[in-house]
Length: 343
Image (tube, rainbow, N blue to C red; front, top):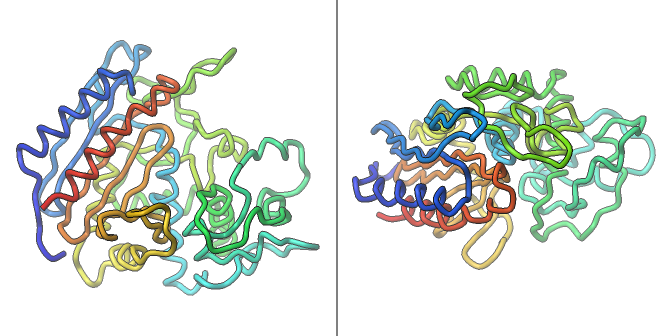
């Protein structure tokens, strides 16, 4: 870390105003933004309510949210980093080497760990695991038997890659992914982070209301993760804003002996261009000349890291509660990126 750069009162005021505006625009019933600088304290900003179904209770840093695709960088990515360091995985080897034996053609199994992390594998982008309902083969085998959708190398966001990585982690460790992640989160001091399902209570933010069914509450929103029992490499983790910034501070610890920090720095080498000004690292989206790493979750969550300054921002909302209004989070997310990038 070259310079510890705390957020100013003006910064936090802008972020709080942006959060309030997003809630006023109907993006989410409520939410929390936590910003800070590693080792220099944090500021918790909240607005709105958790849900009308929680009697108007206001959210705070301890409110539990479905993190959706943040699971990729909060569970799978750090566990892959540890497995690489332990020699259990190899970045440039085909994922089939880290899965149970595959009989017959498995074209998607030739994708490397690096390609799966960087969304450059060419695997099918539309997840749709419901199409395999009733299949008598494990998920990893069904995916690896699929033909590639495109030539490896170009960027396309693909959940299947992280599903395979989760399966590979479980195989090389001979332990379920949820237990591997639970050990990691306990070690890092993240007591409220876990895979679901969780018992519905006012501390947990409900998500989507689906036709003819009760509102999802403590049950994973991602339908593909749900078909896998709620535990998957691409989605399924629940967490709080407080736990997310605890995780951010662990990643931003400048100690050279910090393996998570070393893995983050290595992962911020661009692997593919997403669009002008944005690149894909290993897992993370890279912005501002590859100095900022961030990731979003479909439900309305985000995590932003600035290793050079030690800054971080966590956004926790249940925007899918309000259906298509989730897209109204875009201005807030843009504001967060602009603010964390400023020096």
